[in-house]
Length: 465
Image 1 (cartoon, rainbow, N blue to C red):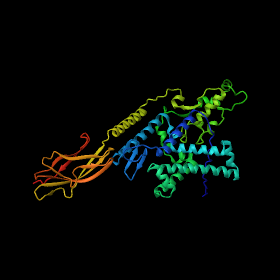
Image 2 (image 1 turned 180 degrees about the vertical axis):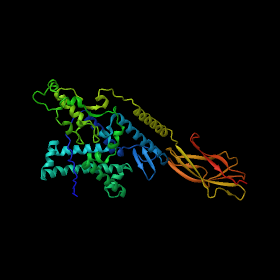
Image 3 (image 1 turned 90 degrees about the horizontal axis):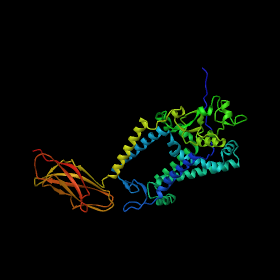
Image 4 (image 1 turned 90 degrees about the vertical axis):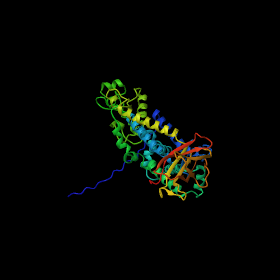
């Protein structure tokens, strides 16, 4: 038997060329917005009558999530399910209509990789200069430029990592404690991990994350159809009858090229040079394409220079390329849209109609009931009350539907709760001896505002005989 030695081919690093255009400007706008939100929110102050003055804070110790004027309590965490469902449906809807625009403009991998590439371009020069730098030996220039590039990458990665930890505590205080070596171990570990991952993902692996790690690039094609808008090369126009050809004698005008059966593509390679993942869009739809549309800007710039019509590469659908009409309102997209709006509506209703007073009742079943010395029957209940208001509240607890019942809360005469606080206590309900169990309700009513109340069902157990 013969032996075969396999070799793993290492892909050459992609060095995209800079480009100007409307889609490049859109990416700058999204990048600026995303970075402003991510790096700025922990430092944004938000005055509250109770709680921290940080606009967005995930307080695990206090079991509170503060989102501007909204305070999320543990019992409200089902909202997270709604948010994740909305995000998934939004992704499905956008993908079915406009392809992988999320990958091209909003994905964190794309945003940070774009930033790291700009740093590389700023330090090492434009694409030809970077290619020369890659090929030259490790001399003083290469070490200095490469070293400065990686140093800035590490700095950005570190700021990214420590910023994430600031969402979990008071940002100014945590920064001081971090650099004073007084922060919790979890903060150092999280910052180090995110620094390393940001540096690796955005600086070293880059497009390989999209190629080999991201599952979205593998299953997104299942949501495409002939009406989905994707970045496409107009093959018929670009190739003509005899293919593409560079500009040259007798091939400089549309008329000359048409007479020779040539397409409008002058094979300049500009679209390939600006692609951040290094593919040739002229080879058709590819799983690696993130639909950033920088190739559209590149091709449009060339078409403008030659004086020809733009749009050789454009956002379009398969039907449009075949001369058919693109359907935007199709059943699949409409189903995604309806489900999306339904989830948004339900979540909005749930948040806006949340009760500011939570009442939970749990019957103590060991024992289920006891007989007192005077013959009365006693049931015990554990009561938990959450006051979500920003004022101190005084409540009275009533037993509705139990005539002659006696409520004993020990030394408590009334239920007093601090702003945005909870209280757990035991109440004992005593009733004259009788036969059979009886349904009733606990009602908690504010002594300052009778409209602030909550009611929960309960059962009073008595001997059957």
